[in-house]
Image (tube, rainbow, N blue to C red; front, side, top):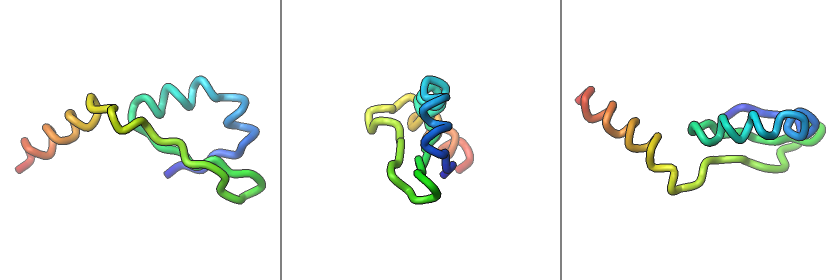
Length: 59
C-alpha cells in the first residue's frame, strides 16, 4: 500500500481519488505516523469482477 504524506494528499486529492476509483489503496501519514487508510468502497465490483475473471481464466 502506498504511503502519502498529508500535505501531498491535500494537494493532489482529486488525482488520488481517481486512482482509488481504479482500485488503488493509500495510507495517509502525518509526520510518518499513519492517520488514515483510503480504500475503494466495497461496491466497486467492476474492478473486482475483472480480477476474478482474470484469475478464472488463469485456472
